[in-house]
Length: 427
Image (cartoon, rainbow, N blue to C red; front, side, top):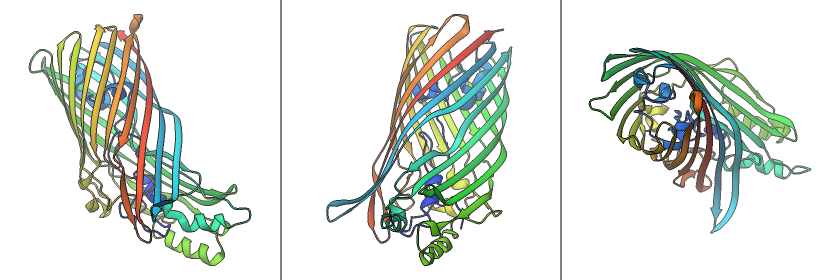
């Protein structure tokens, strides 16, 4: 068994840690993939046909062949407020409710573009996958045996669980306009991924587990401008074949449970969290997107985008058979009361994660959701611009069937605040 599982959780605590790091969704995206890369995205949500801003390096790289000539630099930061909970009712009364309320103040990304005549070169640093960070200070519903053992200790306490799953990517490539209305792009990407699991009680380590992987992949793009004002962007990101290596996996469960229980728990946990030095396959699925944007006049533009995540093509050592492909559909509008100076935008997006109740995990399930965004952009003199974006990522509440407990209620939502500072040096 591998540590990025996509199966129904068991009551005994073996799979609980793994379930968190697999699908602890940051915001947009599906089970593993993420798509919230920039402040411009977080104020509009539909970015797959844009040719004007450097974050197109992530959403519509071929469109950069039509960006304003010169050098474009942009640095972004996102602040995430994530709220996850799982609870269990018995005879109409709430028996347990565990929460992860976490503020992640810093999630940086960056973009650089240089365009000259028909050519554009670009680079970006983004978080393309993983679930970010979660922190359950008092345990979770699927680790009730540990919760119960620590609750009866002297003095009573609870397991403190900290989990992280991050897939960082460095991307570099180029775009070329074959004709004034058509361009192509090609880029290479290196994905560096890690997951960490830490469980503590009374300041002592119970579990310390870390896995890492890295792999190069290719990205392709096409952009068409069949008529004035109309932009059509296509993007395909090839699969990242990630072979993971367990860097460390230390258990000290006797600090929380009696010797017999600790031994049984460690034995069961080893079926999910492998020992140091072992390897397993868990790919980052390929991504395809289509964006269509139309500028009606200098004051008004509309964009729509569809992003498809080919999760069934990834090698998850058989676990990909338990899920479907995921998708996102987004609509964004932009109003510019001061063209080339001030723009205001809003967006809405529906996300289908590709998971279902049979694959949900209680700590951070891949729930379907509806996202709302808004914000603005102001361009100062000397080519300096500021973007502000705000997105509320809401999900539809659901449940997981946990053997021994029954239905466990699952809820999650996220607020994301983003700011970017951009600079353009004309050619």
